[in-house]
Length: 146
Ligand SMILES: [Zn+2]
Image 1: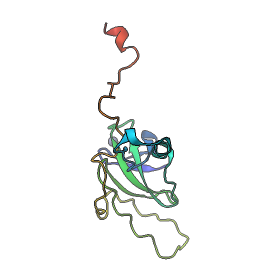
Image 2: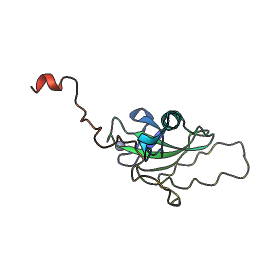
Image 3: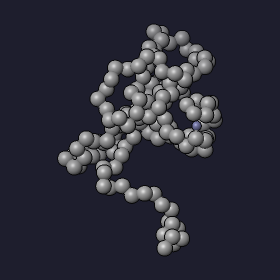
Image 4: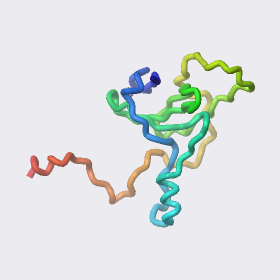
């Protein structure tokens, strides 16, 4: 089981979190101009690296806040945890030779060095275009508030 360092609550068991997929997938700037192929690439095509991967997590049973995490998909080592909307920190340089031993050191919770600025929306969380927003209400809301 992973011990995930929530930026708000500190280290907690993996069971308190939900995985949110790849981080830094910006909403298309001109969504109405996208072809079906471009939409499908935005919606369904994700990286699947063997190594460091930037992904989104939410602390579902804790502070309920989303954050980004750099995690090694091979060793499960957590390299960095950082807020939504912050550019991906530079990944640490992998070791030159594989010694065959797994890393047992504590996972770092701070980004090492800031990555060069990327052209990205302020928030990398997908948003609906304006005018297409509806407040979330439970199904029984209208029955109770007529
Ligand atoms: Zn939390």
